[in-house]
Length: 217
Image 1 (spheres, rainbow, N blue to C red):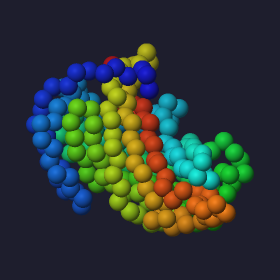
Image 2 (image 1 turned 90 degrees about the vertical axis):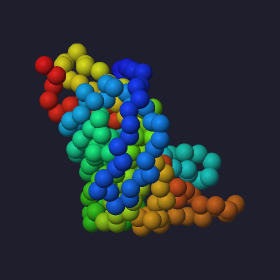
Image 3 (image 1 turned 120 degrees about the horizontal axis):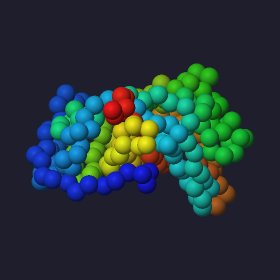
Image 4 (image 1 turned 60 degrees about the horizontal axis):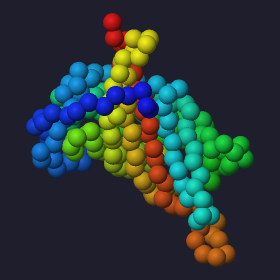
């Protein structure tokens, strides 16, 4: 993500979100990078330079991290009216990789993702708001195991650049924390000393390098 260049923001009045089932309150005194106006348009996540992953506490003393390698994305960013921005990411759950084959096999089984019955999970945005500087919030519906529930992502804009191949790139980091049991992921084992083997809280991480759908001439 270090290829992105930051630019100083200029003041722009925020536009309240429209057509959202979960509207955000308007933020006051926000500042929007003027270069964001030029980024308005369709984008796609560049998978080799991005990461859609998660982290979860294991046995109360350590953290297990994993990521999904196979997914499709449709992104629309509106630099003048952030509330019009939207995103859809559809993930093939069978592509999960935590670095341990046995653990990955358990995750795709019936105890967790149940990939045979539910091969995909998805995030579809419902509202976006600019909170100030380079920070945004995006609300959306997260679907896992056929269950859809609302979540909110914090998105940080990292900057944009035209790479040596003529592609315009924009970088964003997104994070949120969910309770996995809300999506039917209830499997666990209790520890003799108290607590559980796998935390119910899971942190989702979206480290995104997006490419404009048409290369810059």
